Image: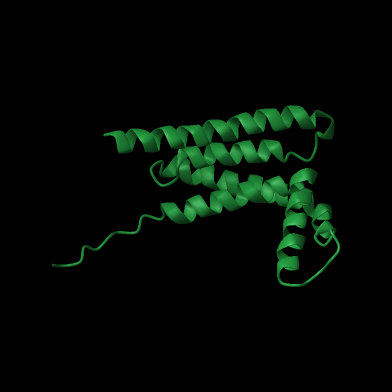
Length: 139
């Protein structure tokens, strides 16, 4: 019984990079940032470390930087997708676009509209992935 050698295709690396860029863009949304801070505080308290709830508040000053970094990584992902369409998942790119729209730091007055549009795009990409997985298993 010989072992089969699998060729690494690099999809995992690009999918992870795309996810990190999308997740980085959503840091600019205050509610999500606040939830992350509270989760860190809760996790630290499990280990007996008690801190105030604004431990990661310094990240709020860099929200534009994180969002811009997310857009830059998305642009790189789109360029790679244009050159080699089979290397990056279309669903992940769509997911990251939705996260970038949710975390858009410039239009605070339209925050609910951006959350609805971005959330719809994120849900669309997730449902597309789930439908595709169930179709593959059904065959």
